[in-house]
Amino acid sequence: MKQDGIAIKGTRQGLLITLGEGPWEAQVDALARRLEKGVAFFRGGRAALDVGPRPLDEARIRQVQDLLARYEVDLWAVQSTADATILAAVRLGLSPILGPEEAVGGGEPQRNGEESPASAASGLVVERTVRSGQRIEHPGDIIVIGDVHAGAEIIAGRHVVVWGKLHGVVHAGALGDESAVVCALDLAPTQLRIADHIARTPEERRRRPVPEMARVHKGRIEAVPWPHR
Amino acid sequence: MSARVVTITSGKGGVGKTTVTANLGVALAMRGQRVVTIDADIGLRNLDVMLGLENRIVYDLVDVVEGRCRLRQALVRDKRLQELYLLPAAQTRDKSAVRAEDMVRICNELRESFDFLLVDSPAGIEQGFRNAVAPADEVLIVTNPEVAAVRDADRVIGLIEAEGKGPARLIINRLKPELVRRGDMLDTSAVIELLAIDLIGIIPEDEAVIMAANTGRPVAFTDNSPAGRAFHHIARRLMGEEVPFAPLKEPGLLERLFRWMRAEGEE
Image (cartoon, one colour):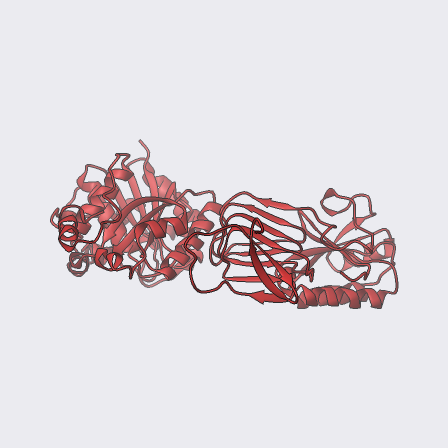
């Protein structure tokens, strides 16, 4: 992952996007690139924006709000230590969050520009059957203990592990992480994506499913039985 | 004594929700239960036709909601069974005429005087579906043994689980043993494996059902059709009886298949 200074982590209230230090326009551009890379991941989500000590006016906050809106992300809160920024956010009807200590969701905010979004977020464990029409997204790892039915979508910033059948659509490394993997006891997704790569399960049905792991190898997705022979 | 509210839904249209509702209503009433079948498909009502009660409707569900009549006045008593009633849908309105709270209130008002309230849900997952599910104590999902219907059923099962109305139970309708035997139709075990919920009944494909729908006399009234017997089995299971399922798969021989269809075809 490139070191653009932006950290994205999942919280109970949605995503927390933390801008790094450096010129404002550069950070907004970097955020735009992140959004472009993870279109599927961001779509339909809500986010809080942490801008640190920057004093921002309404126009600049609106600039980010509009950018996020283009990717169907709803900006609901702004976090800052600068009073001017907080006031501008309130005037725009956004929820203000003062200071870095009471970070959204209770965790400490990620200010470290070197962190990839993967390590900036912990795992999400889903203990149920994920059914058609249900969509689970999380910036870190997703672990499903149960089956993922056809028509369901699992979208993770990093790895996806399914302890059961995986028949839906799965996207690992959805923020652009090519090192992400997908593991399942029965790996037969409708479509499997890792970062920008897309693969489909071969049409012929396997008689007896074996646990498999899919990863990007030499520029394409390949699935290998687990354990390796 | 308080009634159980059982909602019959499916996601996909045309899989047999209304047929199931009408026949379960008949089968339960024949077994001494006091039953109201409620048509929640506002604007596209059918349940009255299947029960042969269309020409007895004076008031409907929307009239009750909008206060033009008392709930009791809108109930249509079946012409054959003393303890079977229909609360008809309005044909001239649409789903927005009723809210989820209205359905809950109406069902609560009926609970005291009946044993079962069967709510016939419209297809889809929009307001009409939500209205039908809101008052439910339990939900029956109807599906056909085909991939599209099963996929929609899965979607609906997920929504019902999210509403805290689960676990839903499954009715597989229009199973054709002959096609299953040839491997041209999803068999019962495949459907159950795909959906991972409990089965409450299997209705075989039966011409008698189509004829019954046209004459307003549901097949559950008589004992001489495989589908009619299957509906009685489901009714008994709803009443808490253990009714064993017949073998789900039968090996090759045509003669054995015919005998099985005749003897236990309802399963």
